[in-house]
Image (cartoon, rainbow over all chains, first blue to last red; front, side):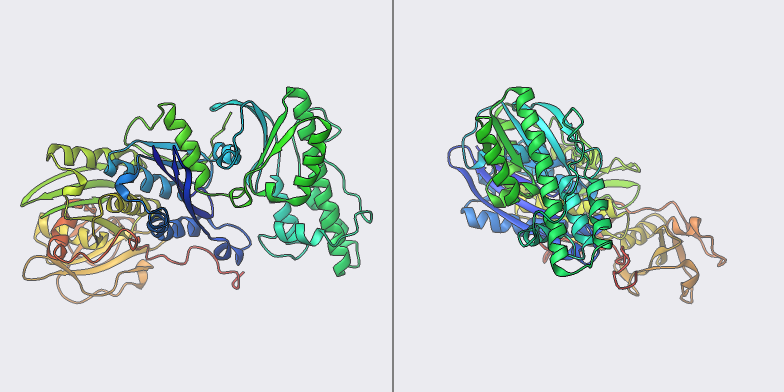
Length: 332
Length: 219
């Protein structure tokens, strides 16, 4: 079975081909980040318009890259949600009609399911496990008992972790999206100069709150000399606070569930501090941490093709020719 | 020659098939159900004609102007089918299709099309029928404030819901209820079918309203 995956939920257009025998055959990605950077955030209408321009050329490149024909495609998986409704509809319209014209099944996929299965694209991983989904749109701890059997353990009650990174970067004058820039700058910071709170770590439970940290960073910056070193020091303190909070909640989730395997996925899972501290912490609880390869931490078509493959393999597919986007869609 | 046309630009949702001289068509009115309706409608048309997508010569779609989301549904469905079945594409203006409908229904030869564009604007097109009865654009389509419209001289028929939303003082026959239909797009596409101008990769909606976000400089 050869599955085409299509991802258009936000500001990346991604396509991929996943083969039952050979695994991932190839993928193509176009990021709109430069388009939105000048506006300081993703502009939904511009995102939708760009997906229309980029999706078919990417599909053509993908077939060429994988040396496959259209007729070789056995099924189509497209991201159905959550995400920007207009952006999702582009992928759904193209994906559903493409499958219809080929006479093959189609399947609408949950974007976050794609993320949490992404480590399996490269390495085998058994259920059950705990997944920390951290991106610009989500911060969730999920107990993954099996495919399609998910239990939400905790989530952010305000900003997502990646959102907090980007917003704080903006406040520090690092541009948009500046989360990764902030993390890089943090390497030059003095860890002891500032101490930021670890939000909600004194509360029992596994929920997060990151919007206060952003304000804390701004106040600290405004009351400082506002020189280059201070900017780096604040970046460092901010990153430490986010990472420590994520690590602590992961540890609690592992204790609570008595599971050993932890998957980290989503854009923030590329953060090196987070990876280092979690690997170190996992050794303490005798567990193992799994990450997607770096290019599959952020949005991509490969994870959608793979999640689609697993779902289709179970005999699931869209029951009819209607297609729709589910901008808000709970995974659990 | 076999052409499949589809349109989801307005409250209308329609598709039509030209099958070697025979025309069949389906149309519904829906404010939001285009993504539920369009593929099942297309599927029914082709099934009834016992055709597969690969039996088609080209696809025709309403490229706009109209609802942004609607335009992307028509364009996306067209792209998906055209990519899968390796078909060329003929984009047709929704304003031209409305003018063509006025000719088909009322033999109107000189047509002013005004489609409500919200935000106190209309999508504006000026069309005239040629000797073959095909609507030809007299001037470039635009999104415009109704009060800025310059009316051409002569006898004209007014078409489209823009005339009802923004009442005008000119006295001319007005067909507010005419909306774009895939079957009128077939009429306009047939002369182009021997040399279809577009491909799946180059399909784009024509929004006319391209200023959708305040530029960062203007803030």
